[in-house]
Image: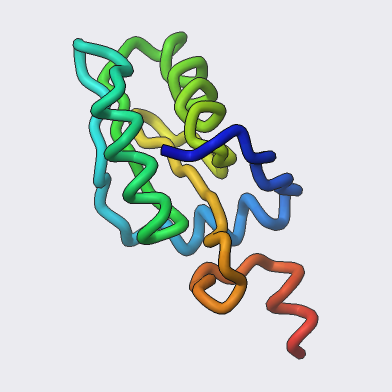
Length: 112
């Protein structure tokens, strides 16, 4: 699992770029009635390590979804890029800069 690394700091432009990239993704993790357990956190951590940007489905009441997304982000060292309905989008860049596949808005403009 992720250690207590600092989560990425995202501005509005970064969040929009990440939501746009996550649009076609399917949820890889579901938070069900059992809530957040060690197995779920581990599965999310592995998905973030492998993909950097993941979508998860939170099957809880509206008021709880933001709290659960924030808790999962804190426990995996990631950032919440968006919360749309029951779907949450989490982002954690790969530790090795050469393995990073997700492009943020600022770095995309730097290449132009």
